[in-house]
Length: 439
Image 1 (tube, rainbow, N blue to C red):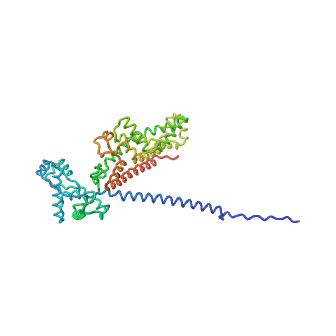
Image 2 (cartoon, rainbow, N blue to C red):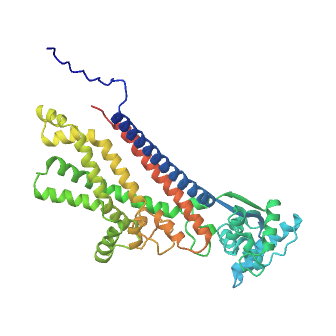
């Protein structure tokens, strides 16, 4: 009798890829492809967005101007100031100077009052303001650089539909474009960088070409000063107490939950709160950067508190234990050891919170920062208490107007706002890398 031998099963080679491994590798490859596609879609969307912003906003930094040398004598100045319609008299002086330049350039054009307004708008008041403030220039040749009318400006920027211009159009007519082309060839009209858009103020609905965003930028900076002055010390102090000193009980748990909830509250709710408390109850001045700073401080505090607590938590407990072990008090351990190590995260969270507040519009609308034409304040305190606008509020104001030039200005304002936000984020990154310590 012989024993039956059982055949030994063949073991699969470790170098061979079985079916389960093949499926797992395929799933990993698909997930990697999904990730690459998602990144590509996100980058493509960002590129399309930036291209749209730049293509629509860059023309706002350029403007077409009419450069005409004008000489006003003392007799002409006295005669103009003695009449009832002074602006009309100065406009006639400009028409005479422009007609003389056109004649010397060999351009045949009848520059009547209506045609002049279609080309450069109303210029009489500009001349009067200049000579009233600079009487020493009387009798001397002065080169006036007057902004062209908005439709002429759009024509040279390529954003005006020429085929829709008819002879009965009261804003621009076909012969006006021929005159503008001839003036540009003769050097009387040119496209220059519009510094007034960066440093100027809003001009209302009647002069879209002369509108600037400088006063609104100053209003935003004043609000950010108020937010930084209030939100940083309050937010950091609250974070240090909750994270390092507060007892862990139901009250502190309730506070922490509500801070997290406040970070998710829509900004318009803070605007309603600011309207009810700061304006209607406390009777603070409406449309003032001081009130806007208070509202944005309430909105920014939860973000700063959450980021500061996360920075404090990231400091290893051994740092606290070592400080306490050598005889330091609880406060000394926190302020001399923990807080300096958490400073990069605190600064980063604060700057990100300020950047978020800089782009908010809804709270500013509710406290009335769009109901007037912004102007530069005479003093710092006057700027805080006086009415002003802000970057996002001014952009909203321009978009709501009908003239296409205001929409162009709004795109340019978005570029300036993005530059501010990008600068603040770069500063946050540099500060974090500068003060960050690894352990």
